[in-house]
Length: 121
Image (cartoon, rainbow, N blue to C red):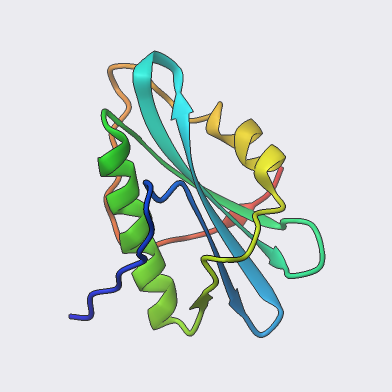
């Protein structure tokens, strides 16, 4: 098992990863009721996002950050390189998608390391 750490002074709220012209942006955003969600977007590095994945909600930002780190580790195993100094460019799309995360009593937070991108609707 490989452990991957992304250091910084503050909480990790977003991360950009690149591989062969493909870009993945991972965003942690607040969801209604003090909950936190994770949105991952994928697409060409110089284009618009083509796929999305949503996870959550979680009760704490720390738990959402843990899920982000887990998914980032999985993506590194697939050859993506983290670029923590890179700016996020798809934050508006991420904000729209985080609103679609269910926050009701039936919503279950997924901590699975598998990540499947669905087409962006």
